[in-house]
Image (tube, rainbow, N blue to C red; front, top):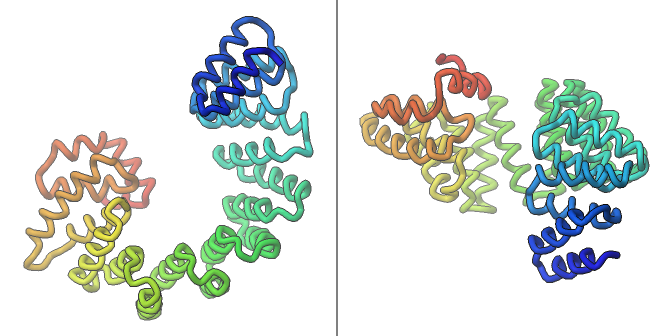
Length: 351
C-alpha cells in the first residue's frame, strides 16, 4: 500500500472525496501504481460524476493491469453515462468473460443493451443472471421486460409470473404483468392481476392508480369512479385521486374535470403531469368562463415552458398561440423539433 493510497483512504473516511481524488491523481502522475489505486480512483471519480475522467483513467489503469474486472466494470458504466453505448457494451461483455460468475458486469451489460434497444441480447443476459442466481426475482422480472419489448407477450407474462413466484410482493413485476396483459389485448386478466397485487399490497399507491387508469382506459367509467371514491375514503387528501378523477370526467363535464385538476395541482404543485393536464383542461373550456380559463392556462403554460417538459410542447404551443404570445411559442423549439416532439408523444395529428 502506498502512502498516497493510505492518505486517500483516510480522506475518504473523513468525508473529503475531492481531496482523496487529488491524492490518487498525484499518485498515478508519479508513475505506475498498484491495482488498488486505480480501482479506488476510478470508483471515486464515478461517484463524483466525472465520467470523462473515469473513462480516461480506467483506460490508463487497464493498460497497467490488463483484464482487471473491477476497473473494466467501472469503465463500462461510465461509458453508459457518457451515452457511448456500443463501447460500453463491448467493455462490459469483455468483463463478463473475465469473471463469468460475478453478476455486476452482467447487470450493467443488460442495462446498456436495453438502452440500445437490443432486447433480444438483453434477454440472454438476464437468462444467464437467473442461472447464476436462481432465487433472485429481479432477473426473471428484467427478462420479462425484454420479452415485452420484443412483443412476445405470453413469454413475458410467464417470466413476470416466475418473478412473482419468487417474491409475491414485487410491485414492479405486478405492474409490468398487468401492462403486458393489457398490451396482449387481455384487459380482464390485466385487471385481475392488479386486483391480486392490491390484495397483497392494499396501500400501494402505484397499484391503486394503475387500476384506476386501466378502468378508465378500458371504458369502465362508472367502475373507475366508484373505485376512486372508495380509495378516497382511505386517503382523502391524495392528489393522484383528484388527478385521475379529472381525467375521467374529461370533456363529459369540463367544469368538474377542471375543478378536480385544480385540486390535484394544488395538492402537488411540483407535479408536471398534473400541471400539464390542468393547462390543457383549462384551454378546452368553452363555457362563459372561457376567458378566465384561458388566462389561467396561459400563466400555467409560461411556467411549464420554462421547464420544457415532454410531451407537453404541443399543448403549450396551442395555449401560448391562443394567447398570441408567439415569442414564447418560438422559444419552445423549431418546427422540426416540435414535430418530432408531437410525433413522439402521439400528438402529431395537428401537424
